[in-house]
Image (tube, rainbow, N blue to C red; front, side, top):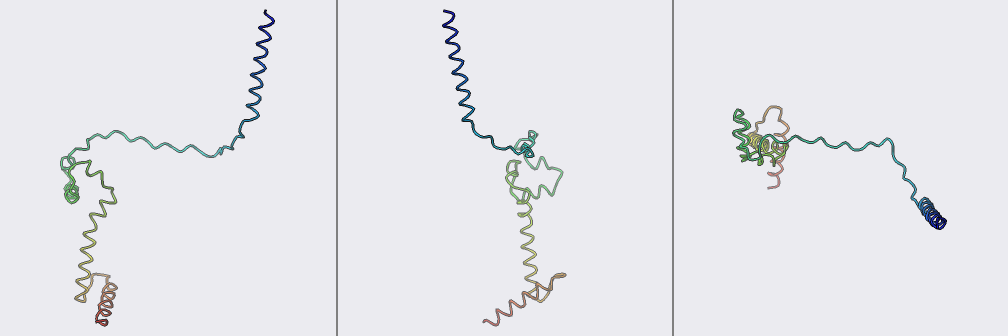
Length: 137
């Protein structure tokens, strides 16, 4: 009986090696790996916030009058409301009324043939536009 067991185990051994051989034959060709390519660095984790989103801005910025003026202009009261704005958006919202006011000043001065410092070209443009409008009437 010992011989039969040995014969069976030899048969199994041959089957395993033939399976391995077929696997080797059918394996995919390896794609070349760029050795110079580095893994993308993971972004650094931000620390946990030290205040809640419901923190009142007037308490947090009680010593900064100008910041409180900005919060009033934006109509925000909490940190969470303020976080909805980007820095560029805040600057744009704050500066737009000033830009509009300066444009109105330039226009009104040009109507009276006056101009701001180094702004003669604007006056010339306005005069040529108003002259063209008068000619078309």
